[in-house]
Amino acid sequence: MELTGIRFIDDLDLEPETPVFIRTDFNVPLSDDGEVDDDFRIRAAIPTIEHAVQKDCRVILASHLGRPGGERDPDLSMEPVGEALTELMDIEVVLPEDLTGHPVQRLVSNLKPGNQVMLLENLRFDPGEKGANKEFAEGLAELADLYVNDAFGAMHRKHASVYTMAQFFDRDEKAAGRLVKSELEHLGDLLDEPKRPFTAIMGGAKVSDKLGVMERLSKKVDRILVGGAMAYTFLKADGERVGDSMVEEDYVAQAGRILDTATSRGVDIVLPLDHVVAPGFDAVEADVQTTEGPGIPDGNMGLDIGPRTVEAYSEAIRESRTVFWNGPMGVFEKDLFARGTLEIARTLALAPCHSVVGGGDSASAVRKAEVTDAIDHVSTGGGAALQVVEGKALPGVDALRANHPFDD
Ligand code: AMP
Image (cartoon, rainbow, N blue to C red; front, side, top):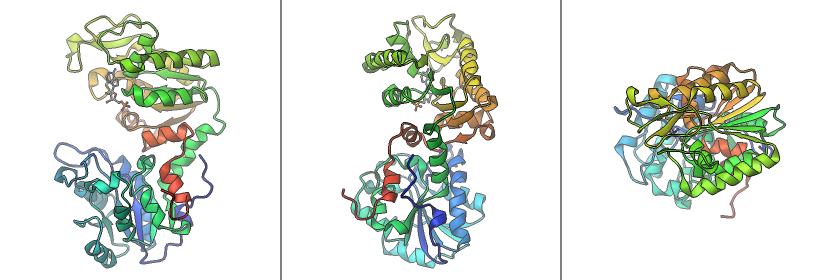
């Protein structure tokens, strides 16, 4: 990842009282009673926020949360995030009703630097956020003199607060935050002469989203271990019986081509050797079986990798010097199908390799296995992390590099 041409928050001249807009990624899971269920992303944003608070700036924080669809939705208010921030940072959080306009501007000028921060409501309450609307972006830009983007998990999106807004700031008035810096460095390192063997572990359900990534990754890695539902599209392409497992039929042919190309390039795409299967997601323990081989009997769905696969994949991980993991090995949200994912997390934590995990689900699996500290880098981003590992540019980074106004 090309880091030249962008500034980082530590390069900005943060004078006391300066209004600084920090785009954060507070898109966190909420519990049924509306509290923050996992504060990983909030904690990750704190170094940048704290830096601006310590410089006595007027700090305006803004993020999206879930998918309110461009309308106010009280269930997706930023209020619980504000409460978590108060607790984590011991600071008062001001939560205005409006996202832009004079009343919010007045509140910004009344903020008590060092003691208070402002947290705007969910940016996606306004359709202009996802629509990359110029007027909305300008309204946000009018709140501050400096713009900092620390929302790594959203930087692959061309949305108003991530992309469009940055054009209202000159290059010396905008910067990436500390989290973005750390993410770009760690993920960029994977592309920059990684130690070999370099293994990618790919899992999760959305084959359609991940085939392109796999195609590009297969040019950079030595082998790809495939798990999760996406394995079934590959197994089907390989002529295996997949029973009622989740298969994206439209992508079977492409999966087959990826297998062929990888083989001709000498890259191993490794598919599961056995599976934990059941008639459906809601199966009880008595219905769960482990297959003997890679085929799945009719009337069953593959819901986790089996013990022989765990062993083979673990061996491959232990032999690797660099490992990138994206996507769970099974339906790890359910204890009956979590073993494969948790075992892979534990093996990765113990392996003597450079380990990087990207993607919301794999990151939460690493936390569930309680091995976060033993992984070299757990990314806060899913799509954004994949895009960096593929060597593709991020719109949010390009926007920091560009002088204003942008072309589009
Ligand atoms: P993704 O967003 O593509 O990374 O997919 C993550 C989701 O894939 C998780 O919610 C898992 O429960 C789901 N998943 C993983 N393995 C399977 C499987 N074998 N069958 C159905 N869903 C799965």
